[in-house]
Image 1 (cartoon, helix red, strand yellow):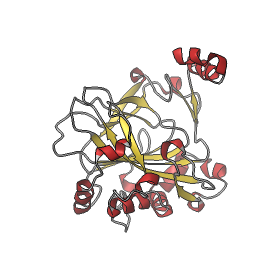
Image 2 (tube, helix red, strand yellow):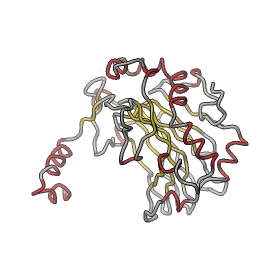
Image 3 (cartoon, helix red, strand yellow):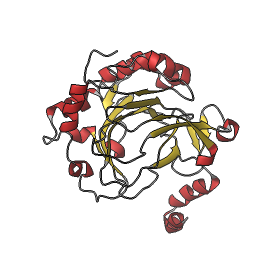
Image 4 (cartoon, helix red, strand yellow):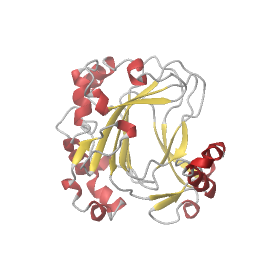
Length: 294
């Protein structure tokens, strides 16, 4: 367990890892209650997270590289973001998940060219648009997230995350005034693994970017959208998850998103022929309009 009370892993040990269908944890009351309340009460306004974008029924993020340079954000939040994009947090993660990570990806250190603990770690320099930090093996990210559901909708169906991602985590900051239902993270597995996995290091998706038809998976667990609950999973082809349908509300779904990227892929994505054809067309300027129509 961590000695840093800012850490989302301060109450987590290896015994908390759920290994089926893939390594993940669901921790209620993840942060000290006093700390959580102070963070909640000093959340930046939604307008700041929107960052000039038009508000609509989708999600918006605001990355660590902007947080740590924005004087409108409290020093406590800036310290929280700095810690969760630091080498110290990465090593803390390895203390708990290192053995499980090596079992999940036996060739990861060979691809890395060094032990996991010797990785060069840095904050992602440009958020979603610039994921890899220069000269770093591990690029860490921490983001404010808001997600609007003014009309009932499925937030996101079953999918896997990008293959370069090592882990992902969410810490929920649900408002006590939020009486909506849904918005939970749903852990799922393949109904027929042979049809979904061409090999142990690849997955066949149904739609771009990495979406899987709901009929092909079955839910196995849920991380409920409730204040101060942490959901974290190690990324792999088996790490299928979704966000359940949320009822209409004027209150944004808010959480902090944590992730990190390697400078190589842990597995491969096999897309339908139609998607591959579309990508090839998009690389041909003369007929890019046809690609968009498809």
